[in-house]
Length: 504
Image (tube, rainbow, N blue to C red):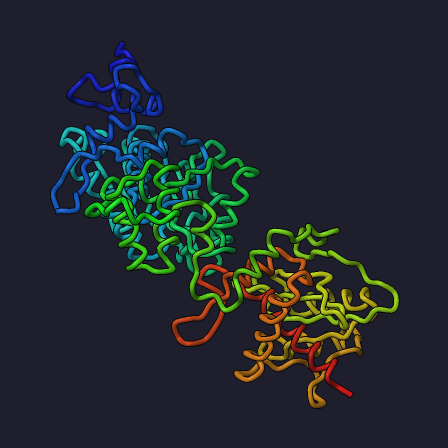
């Protein structure tokens, strides 16, 4: 019998040896001086391309070691740029795949290009393995641009992009790595939910990303990690030894720099690197090279709305008094006899993917938010939901955007639901959003956030406001991977309210 104290004693490895190592990958034998078997095996078997183009053994860097020290079954990693976590996740799961029969590993990248790069890393691991392994127990039957199959141990390694709508469907996955989750396209939360459904109960998960603003899927996963059982790993830029520059003079250090040096034991070469970062990345330095787990999400120079006002309200926003429809309808203030309300609606087609239909209930004279709905409903179901909500709030005035799907919802609210109190502009039912009205209603919302932020009750709405940005085409909208449906419903509500109060 081979002792676990000498897990890598033999120079040659056969299938039996691989399987034995697979059972002790996370052990820390005394002979390895604090390293896990996986770390030692990575250094022995796996090779990576260095920054100067050479091939070298994969020896864990400080960030990778920090991750391994606290790693659990479910992990979420918030990190600065280029810390090597994607490479390490690929390496760890590659070792688990080749040492544990019946394993299916799934890597999901934010773009097709990133998926191809991850696959190149994994393929390099495979191609540099000893010939006895590659031609023996690890002989492949398939090694294409997205899949490596090891039929002799019934194992597979798949790499896909988050834009692949079929990723994970019909599979039972033992290892799941979601790379740059903050930058996934479409609806990242729904994509992630589908991938989780494919994960075996004992499966291992790594969600990792650099931050990309408040309110997206990754930010929400980070905030709720404690309640979902995920281990948080925060990796600031100074963990990486390469992040240094020619030392600066200690005399003119700012108070902030002196505080950083004291709290994190930074030296003058790291401070010099930080100054260079601030000069080159300006407002995005905190996001791309994170220093703490709060400010890195807040770094966004392109937000349409006043961030300070939003952040102040987020710190004091109350929980809903009541939730309905599996949490898609939140109520803070019930209707009060004698008060007038309006229900503003931003409709969609109702499919299970993409944008939500959203509705905001606002007290007419104060503009106070009372309730909010956002969900994947449309057509008659949406018409019934919003007319029921309007009836509950003292037969509120129903303000339905008539663009696109809204025309059908308007007709159904009037006919099938027999609701007559429908807002009209210039004699035509509904609200029309145009290149003229859109900036105007967003201006109403911006002003209200600054002047009367305590009128807003929804944390989800405020998060959407935070990730509502100026787009490269000159327009405005949700940052990639986030939504703006609640924002637009509230903007319509405040725009209609302003028109109503201005009428004689």
